[in-house]
Amino acid sequence: MKNKMKLLSIVLAAFTIFTACANGENQKSEDDSTIKIGSTFPLTGQYSNYGTSTLNGIQMAIDEINKNGGIKGKEISLESMDDKGEITDSVTSYNKLVEDGVSAIIGTNTSTPSNAIAEASQKDVIPVITPTGTEESITAGKANVFRACFTNPYQGNLLAIFAKDTLKAKTAAILVNTSSDYSTGIAQAFEDKAKELGIEVLAKENYGDNDTDFKAQLTSIAKVKADVLLLPEYYEKLALITPQARDAGITSYFLGGDGWDGIIKTMDKSSMDVIEKSYFTNHFSIEDKDKKVAEFVKNYKEFYKEDPTAFSALGYDTVYMIKEAFEKASSDSNEDRIKALKELNFDGITGKFSFDENNNPQKAASIMRIENGEYRFDSIVNPR
Image 1 (cartoon, rainbow, N blue to C red):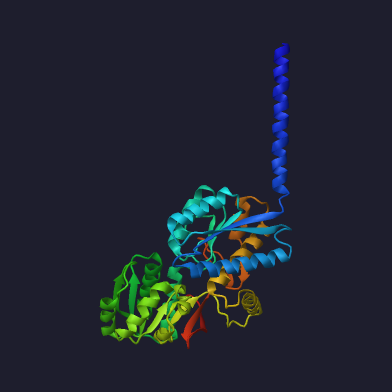
Image 2: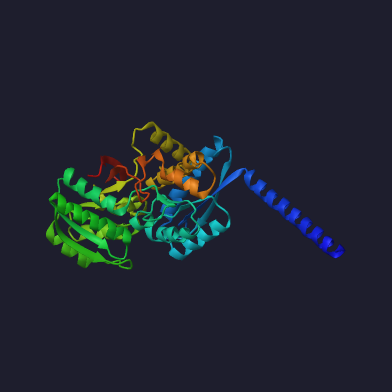
């Protein structure tokens, strides 16, 4: 009996110590003075221009929020990863951020690695927001995954409306990268909407990710003399395609999605005239006279000594979306924070919007044109 009592005393003591430790850990979590947010973007590699621009906007927003009291009195700390725009690196970055205990993850830029992160997040149900991943499947059916940008088909629709209403196009041609969900998503939606609006698609040519010579496809397109040529691509590939298109004798207006943002920095100065009067969808314009936008542009230029891109603005808005949702959430659980994100009526640098059933923002797009080596605001296009 004596031995049994001794054993019971030891068990009770151990339980008391365990309980005290557990309560201490919980208390430490509750008293934590920071909210840790993770980000993963291509900071090196072919899409580093996108990643750096987005991260700049994120960091600027965090600095502002922390300066003004943080989120519920807690400062935001950022853990940033470089995923190089690759699927494997993106998932590795995601897993590392979850392991490090972040409360939300922002990333990544392009659609395919964003999709991989979204899929990986289903086992953790942590809030994930891609500022710029435009493929529809990223958010579809995933309650915890959101985006700040519009989708590929959304852009394709708007580009067809712009071609019809503003450029008065009657004919179109399309050059599409069949290896890219981004490119095919925009191209298919544009083609469908163009036909609906009475624009005749005279030619549609394909290429793959590894192609660098587009002479055969562009020669075929040149023969049809279309009013507009849709080039749904990212800026690095566009720097190869657009000079070859003009060399092939194509005089059409060039149209594209938000992947065009960054082409001016990439193009050789001697070739800048080939993209003159090109048009692309984007998420905001530095020429917007809205007071909030003007203040953002001013502060960004002061801090980074360059103009913000749409990627910068989307990164900036994403942090403020997290702030607003975390402050409105009824608790600090992932579930309540996700619910608060879903219910946002957000008013940011890239527009006013709420989310649809697949967590996609419903908003208008800015149409940008390239003129004298600069991005110029052309018009606003609404879906219909």
